[in-house]
Amino acid sequence: MKKLQIISILLIFGLLSTTTFISCKKDNVETAESNNESNNNNNNTTTECFDIVDLTTYLDNLQTINFINETEGWIVGINSDDVNKSTLVHTTDGGLTWSVMNTDLDIHHAGSVSAPYIQFYNSTDGYMIGKYDVALGGNKLKYTTNKGQTWTVINGSAIGTWDVVAVNSTNAVYIGHNVYGHNNNSVLYQISNSSHEITKTVDLPSSLDFYAKVDMELSEDGTINVPVSRVNINSSLYMARSVDYGTTWTYNEIELDAIYNIDFPSDNTGYVIGDIGLNPTFYKTIDGGITWTKKSLPISFVHHDFFDAENGLGINQDQIYKTTDGGETWTEVTCFSGSEHEPTRGVAFVSPYKWFAIGTRYVSTENKSYSEFYISKE
Image 1: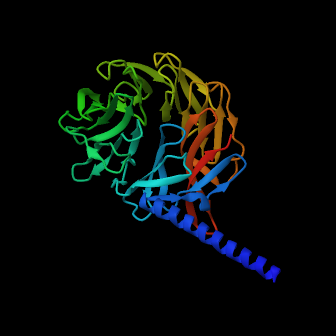
Image 2: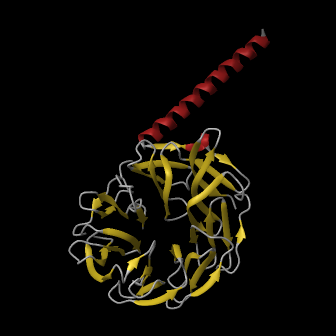
């Protein structure tokens, strides 16, 4: 009889525990769904030095990563259900869970038109080059004040082909070419972060004399560093520098055939990474872009990011390299090498011991690619 009583008690306790567990799980799901979130932990995997979050449910062909600190960031990718649209997802816990902010960025992906380039400068506000208008033939400049849920066209921004955007704590700067109403010159817009209105417009030289390439950096003091081609001058690439928000420019010729991106972890220290033929190369400045020094790389990096002047990462296919001495030496993060995971879409170095990357994993037996978010475990 005593044995039966014990069994009965255990059964009752087990039923109550199961009920409680199911109830808590249900509450979590409802909360996640109400916030348009998904806890990816069931789909996550782990390796020796990085964790993996599967984002395939939301995104295909990951395109842009943007983190403002160790916990909060955004990723852009092609909408999983409509390849003509882009999706923006957001995290506040370092990528463990994600919220869908917008599934209808409606970017035209044909020809040379790039995916939306997004930069957030705080937890709610950011800028985007997007909303390609097929009829008018150009990209619109847009801003958001609600984490990317909705986007508003910046008043007075003429339709054109927009190349690069950069932002500091007070202003954003856009450079584009073939802008209507500006004699097809390259044009610079300075925009206030507080009002999101254009405060300055500069007619730059024609796109044959000033064609912004790939990326741009804007320091807090208004200094702009941007790689440009100047084919009317010669076939070389140049680093163009302005200390007055684009009114006047100086140029440094650099020996690169291709530039992939640039990064200024501080106002004085900056890096430009590219190739000279088959030789991976980067240029470094320690005086805010006044002078640049050429250095070599172990492999060609398709993307790089520095946390500070000394600590940086570079990625290419299934390889990640890290430097802790300002690019003098690079060490491979070996657990990626030769793996099926390819962090080729972007990297964000958010602290000396924390970085994130985005990429893909192709499974041949399924003939399918998975969109993945990588979290370092250093």
